[in-house]
Image 1 (tube, helix red, strand yellow):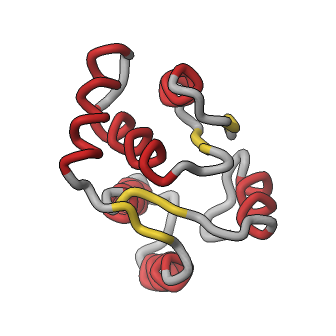
Image 2 (tube, rainbow, N blue to C red):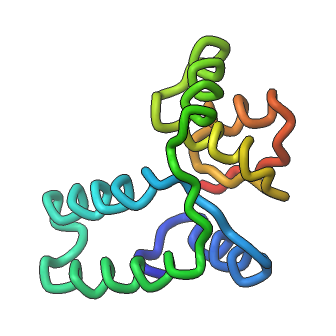
Length: 126
């Protein structure tokens, strides 16, 4: 795991037992944003940042990337109109709709509820 948090073990187990994993093309910039927030609040060291980032990039080599195409945007708009979601949360759910995952994982309760409403099997991880 890159950074130990509540739920890290659950995510690691799910990834180990999955045949395939997908994420929105916007997920990597979100991860980098979160890492930089941790740099600013000093919860990770500047010297650890390149190693963590490299490990994430390496891990993404085996992930299917879902690009933000017009179909994703259309589905995200519908999700935003019917749910109390942030834009990126809606894009992640819309990406999953296109990919048809066995399981949609999130630590965002609103995102989990919206994903359930459209029929995705979900797992909430704290």
